[in-house]
Length: 200
View 1 (cartoon, rainbow, N blue to C red):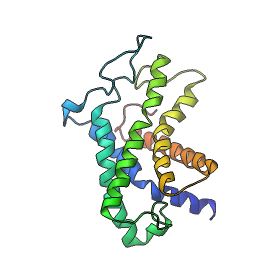
View 2: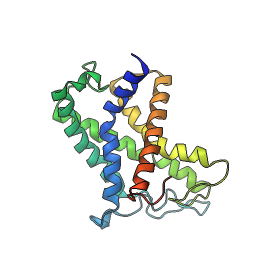
View 3: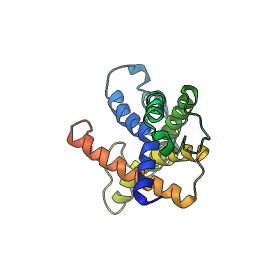
View 4: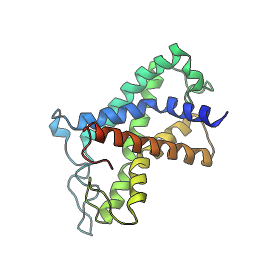
């Protein structure tokens, strides 16, 4: 399997979460279900006087990750089956996961959970360092946090892939790197389309 084939299979497998992430950005910008637009940390601070995660990590966003990933996988699974692409999708290619609605919903739920959960440690770290939520980092650490901001959710999603399609640590890290770069490019696109306030 050459590099282009590998990249193609990576994208085919996680196309659902990619689309779900874009849709969730749009969902969080709407006024629907304002009652869920509450911080996951409930406004609590730690002994350093700083918030646990900050205002940007809300229950509305987390619920969006769950439901939208389930929706996207429920739709993407049949598309893969009809088009013959399931032979190139890591979830289905070795027959370990049947391409059926219940399994696709379960995979979507796990992907959404991994996506949302793995964003939290990054937010926790930035609050400890006094970085304002939603603001860019300046100085020599900017590149690190730009990458981490885009890679955190990918760590979770690729971990879900690992549950059904075991991979080496090196392949896992390559997958995360590809996902992070893709996330960066998508953020740039959303920024230029005025669907995102900050590029990074």
